[in-house]
Each structure stands twice: as structure tokens, then as C-alpha cells.
Length: 114
Length: 113
Image 1 (cartoon, rainbow over the protein chains, first blue to last red):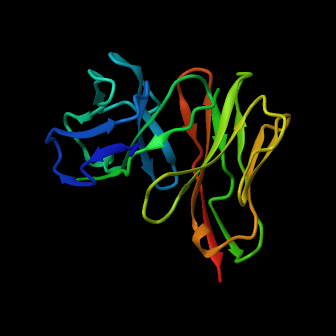
Image 2 (image 1 turned 135 degrees about the vertical axis):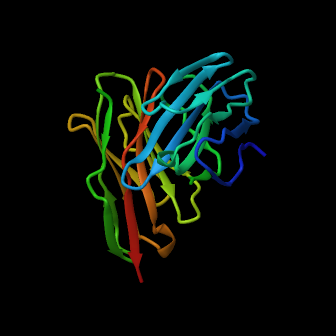
């Protein structure tokens, strides 16, 4: 089944404790992206990647890192999480042939930083 | 600058009525795509409908249609004959010919029995 798999689904952590949220897709998509969703703010793009070893900042990259060493995986790293990073996070992927390609989303990761 | 505006934070609609969710956008690109996604209370993001900037006909997918008015830069979602299961958050999104994909702040739709 074609899917984007995010783990974990829920995560509670403490300030400053490094964490990684994994994202993997099995559709051979070139484009992958991370979003955070906050009430009243919609989805905001954190980072995106057009292909292996190619990543770029979205609108809210501060406090996050990503890597794209393999086409299928695009982990999101919070090296020193803070309470303002408490949010619902989505990973998404798509082919990249133009602006008509829809995003395929993971199930989301609800992160709480205490 | 690239921008998506959804002006209705919340809406209440009687079951079986049609509903229009507003979306306006701003872009300097000639080639772009407009999307609508549904997020039910379970949290997943569900793709509903797509409209390309060069498409002359409004997109339709079952009960969903997209009222695309290019000169006004609007891409409103129309749901015909609303159902209780349509209660959800709805997001409008835009993808330009380069890399960024942006979303609006969403509209929370409540369908009343």
C-alpha cells in the first residue's frame, strides 16, 4: 500500500532532550516536506527536500534540522526542544513534475514539550 | 509574495444544504496548483480536489467542486448536499512552479442535524 509512515504518533518529552521524528515513504517520491500545525495558524512548512541531499528551509525552520540521505526517508530532528515546539507535525511527500502534484500526508505526530 | 487567505474560521451549516468555503490566494507565478484538504477530528489530512491555473473548467469530484475565479484569485470549495460526516477542518493550499507549498489557516465546518 502506498503510504507515508511517521513515527511516533504521540511523543511527550522535556525541554532540551534531543528527539527525532521519522518519516518514510514507499512511493519513490522526489519531494518531501515537514509541516507543523497550530490552532489558528494552519499548516506551516518547516523544511522541504527536492531530492536526496537537497534540503531547504520553509517558513518556520528555527529549532529544527532535517536530512535526506535516502530518497525514502526524511527525519525531523529537534536537537534542543522547547515548549513552543509543542505542536502537531506532519510529514508529506509527492512526485515532482510540476505544481499539479498533490501531497500525500503521514498520520501526524503530536509532540508535547514540557 | 505567496499567500493563502481563508476568511471563515468557523461555519455552521444545516445538513443537506450546500456550503461554500472561501479561499483567496496571491501569487506572481503563471503556473500554480490549488488544492483543498479535509482534516476530520481523527487528524489525518485527506485530499479533496485540485485545480490547475491553466484549467478552464472548474474541477469537480463527486459532491465537491472548486469555484475557480482566476481574475479574482479565488478558489472556493463548494460542497453540495452536506452530510454530518463533512464536519471537519478544511484547508486550502497552493503550489507554485518552484518548491514551496503553502496552506491557509483553515475553516472549521460544523454540519448540524
